[in-house]
Length: 231
Image (cartoon, rainbow, N blue to C red; front, side, top):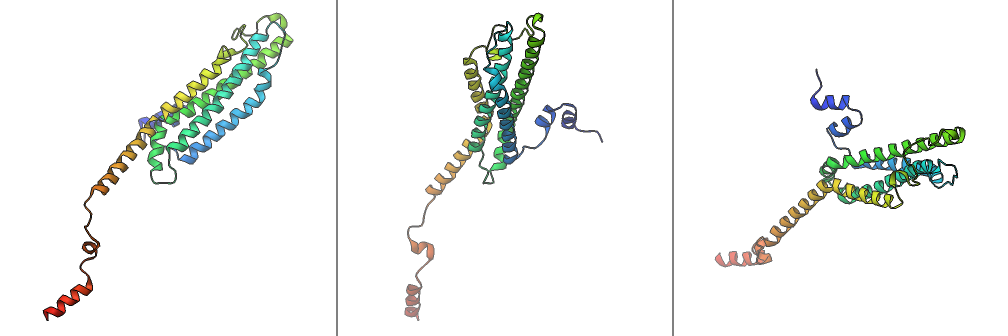
């Protein structure tokens, strides 16, 4: 039997296929584990590149090399901050202890999956930049007559981020995207609150019995007295 359209998409498109055509939203615990993994990987890479990003080299190619190292450092910082922000949105918009969690996760996953894609992009870029830094360092050390080993980052100690405020702007981008991707579940939760308020208001406005006697019925003693009098 031939696969469906979503099946072909899942089979033929690596990473994006299962992510966008998987069919089901993962659970809260699954997403939490993925975020923990991304945070751990980014922290490990950061521990390696932080020293390289602050080295002092007086060779003619130092700015090119420094820019690559700083780029890797910046992407690691951006990845860690993004993980923290996404996790905050996840735990504050999904009530995992109630029966609403499954529907909330479906709403969160609608755009929230893009957060995971961004995390992959941040980590891959950090690795590419650091690999280029290592290659540039080796070329600079063993073949200094080759001139500029890499054209990227020429005369720029801050690499991809151009200048030190670049990381600040990138963090602002991470906050904006995490918030935007959480909009579906935020609107869903707001609709739930509106429904709960309407239900509560209707319950408060419903007519109530005037006395306890109307709820419990006539008093048994009064009923017995009337019955004796009638006899």
